Image (cartoon, rainbow, N blue to C red):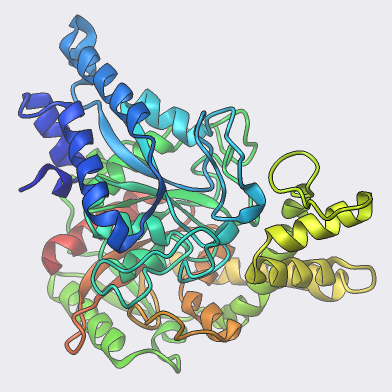
Length: 481
């Protein structure tokens, strides 16, 4: 096995045994980047010098007297391009942030460094995380490593393509309505959306502040547990993070089994129109595999699921319109050269800097927040969101987890979903759990027969039940292998 093919656990074990150094591991990723990124386009930038510097420091720590407590240090991790890393660009794949270099580390990056991981390379995404295919990036094209004519999913498409194409050991993504889970399904990797508040958002460019979460995208469930353990925890800079101690997610995987696990099957997910036949087949097979492994299947209902898409596309654009108002051509980023006064500076800078999808969502969000419409749209959407959360609470009173499809189709070809509504429907199965703030995972489940494309299934657990989620995901990974 080549070094670039390793996952986090394998890399940590190899480093601890002295089979290779962090410098050698990082150099292997850099060489893979040079060999394959031109074809796949996962990365936007890669600060090779800084990555190798941090790798050398990790090797020195490992070789010191104190190194015994840092035996697994020095594993490079790709970073989605909306997470701030000191001294590196943070463009959010948008022209409006051209030239911006971050003066600080996001909390998740600080946590990575404190746990011996190396932030190495910035990966592509839909502009400001608004999209489901990474086609909305203003800075480059990212292709699915399993079929270069198809999209990698989005918005964390660069993260998924980097993991699925072995251009990194693991990656960080963000999930607002499905942006970790859907691309993970498309690119055959594990993706975990933590519960809202489990991971700090400080230093992560905001899309929709009541929904955004950072999470791991990895080559195995155990790798996801290792990375989530490093990321999670209270942060004084983010008031949504609780003071509760972070469980040992890796230890929680011990004895992973589906025997006796109650898995909920929601008819609102399994009886939807528009699901690709191969996705249905693979999901049905996953259900049978779980039942054969000892899981108890329980039918549940989430009656307000049908309103989730409408609720999301009121709340998320509304919050985006407020968050993106800071990008005005004054403080940082793109400033129009055609501006003649303050008003034209704002309008022209934003018109030139933002792409079509970002503009569409800003307009939608501004409209639903406008005088006379706030209560009719945004206020009502928040009330229905509460009903959606109650549906999940009632379901989890009966079952340990829900098993659902992750995305309605496998990866689609570039340009296939030009209609915005069709594109939005890619998140049909992931949006409800995001609105509810619970945790969820995408785990590889099989390949389509005709096109040999990967398909994942989704497991959903209650808020701050990541231990249970990871254990069930691990058990499925083992029986499905």
